[in-house]
Image (tube, rainbow, N blue to C red; front, top):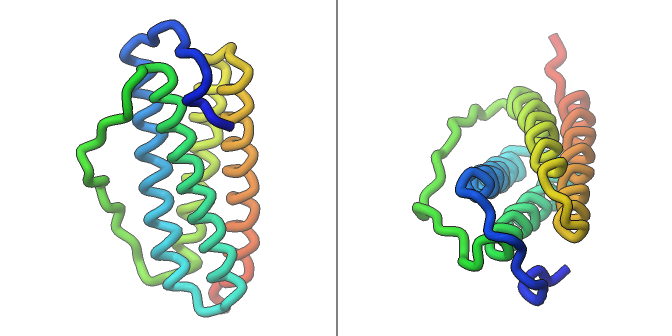
Length: 150
């Protein structure tokens, strides 16, 4: 969906733009985490799942940047460097963390969703929410599959 061809909406307040920037940052950070996890996974099918999830996170960040541009009339400005979340070398532990992170994002994005009446934006947010839910399910499966045996 090309948001650039759509007419700009009523100028948003600064808080809405800050929330969209926060959502963009969360997706970019998740993209980096999933890229690292894909290198940590030993199973080729896990690597492929994580690579596809990484692509979804990249797509979500682009969507948030597009919504920001549509509302603000300017490109989302970033510091260029995202905070790096420390990661362990334990695939199981990292999968567990990402499940919770994705589910937290679902709740955050639902609140954003209900703040918009524009159908195109709501459709995009709905896609992001369903993707994040699916990612959580995939991560739960991977977590179960890689659970340490004591």
